[in-house]
Image (cartoon, rainbow over all chains, first blue to last red; front, side, top):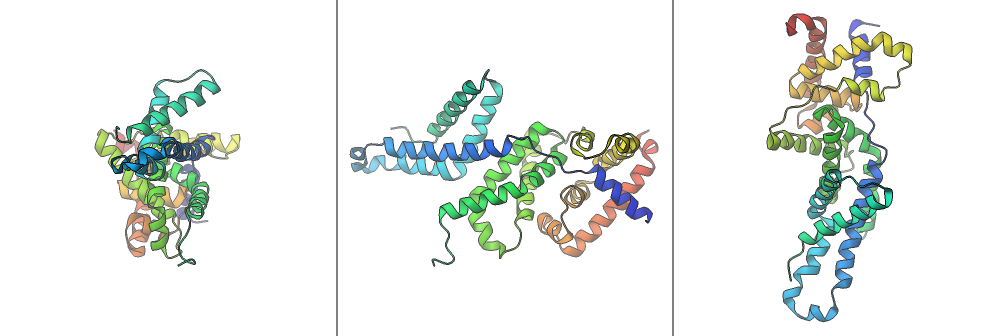
Length: 113
Length: 181
């Protein structure tokens, strides 16, 4: 084997792929699902009677946006950063806190009525 | 057209597939770019959220080509913003990477450790574009064409870039003390 090939072999050994944390994949997918559900809840909670007034149409529209587009990215990251600052003690605490965080951030994207 | 338009459920399923196939690639790239797991996690999340937002268009415009270079390019751009916004420099503690995740047996690890460490330190001294090209080639296993697409260069220019990066790294590794002192 040539020197160049030897060096490339070493380089391949040095630059090994780095495995992400085991829970990372589930966490991100779960957060996206949560956001979609929260946005759907916003739509359901909005009484049909309120929809007669066109001034209220922006609110459910914003809920859809939160669940599906750029808003989602901001919500997820802010919620996660907040979770990091205040580490919960147990699994249930963590789940409850995560939901509260995501819901709180999602509400910021909705226009105030 | 029913044959070309996809439902949201289809797109989500395809995005999930893309995500699972390339999570490790994006995370590895991010890690070698920022040098620590904490920021690599953030960068990886942001990359996939950004990708989710533009997935439909990317699929349309890819003409069936792999989307990995597109993902890495998103990570590259986000990392550039990350440093610009926070006035940060990459951390140099990536020597842990080989030790954390490499499938070395003990004997190989002990024998090769100093050599691998010297190579990783040398990689950190390379210009950004050369370092990134090497990470894509050796950590992610991307071919020249994929790297070219990720870096927005021609195939030929990418081949030259990688060749020069390896040669420069060899020189750095051969003479580390002289350079440091």
